[in-house]
Length: 320
Image 1: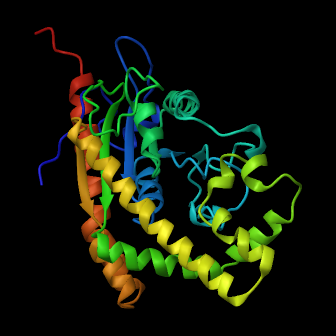
Image 2 (image 1 turned 90 degrees about the vertical axis):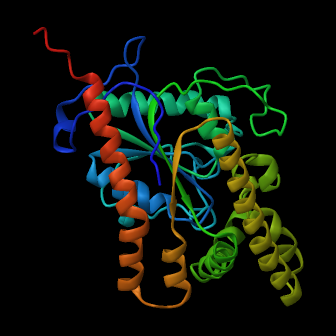
C-alpha cells in the first residue's frame, strides 16, 4: 500500500537523534505529530505506546470520554502499569463536574500539550476514537458551527501540523464479535460494581452532574437495572451496552472514511488478523506475531519514513 503524508516541516532523522531536537510553532515551522485513528477496540492505545516507546514520544489522548477522571473500567482507560512509563496527556485529567469539553476546547488543550511535548524534543503521538476532537485539533482553521462529517460538507482545510496519519482498522464482523467479548471482559473486571458506586454518588443524576462522563456507554444503559435490580434488567442492560458499542464503532469508521474523502492522507493498517487470533484462542504468542506483522511493523515503517522525509526537508541546502 502506498504511504501518503501530509505536508509540513521536519523532525530528526532517527529515533536517537530526536532527543536533541526542538520544535517551534510559528510561520516557518510547525510541530510534527503522529496521529492514530480507529474504531473502539482496534488497538489504538497499544500502538500509541509502541510508537512512543520506539521514537521517544509522549501520548496525547483524543477520546472525549477518557479525558475525564473516573470510571476507568467503564471508559476502558489503559492501566498505568500497561503504559510502560510513557507519559500520557489529557487522559483522566479533567474534572467531570466542570462540564462537557467541546471540540474547540480540546483543540486548545491538545495544542498546548503538543507544543510542550515538542519543546522537550519528543514526538507527540495523538491517539483516540473521537474524530471530532482529532479534526478540531488538526485543521488550520476550525469553525465550531460546521459539521465536517455531514454528507454535504465540502470545505477542505489544510492540516496545521506536519503529520503521519495511521488508521487502525478491523473488519466489521470480526470487530463486532470482539467488542461483544470485550464488554463481557469489562463486566468481569468490575464495570457493574464501578457504575453502582458511581450511581450511588451525589445527586442530581450522573448525566446532569457530569454532562461529559455521564455519556459513557454503560451509564445510561445500566440506570434502569440499578433501579429495579432484576435479572432481566441486567441482561437487557448488558445487551444494550454491546449494541451501542458496536454502533459507536460503525460511526467512528464512517467519520474516518469521511476525513479520507476530504483529502486527509492516511495509511490504513489492518488489525483483523490480530483480533482473529484472539477470538480463535490461538494464544498470546500467535497474537503477538500477528500484531508485529500486520500492525506494528507497517506502522513503525510509516513513522520512520515520515521522520526521514521530514529530516530531509529540514536539512539546510549546501552553499556549494
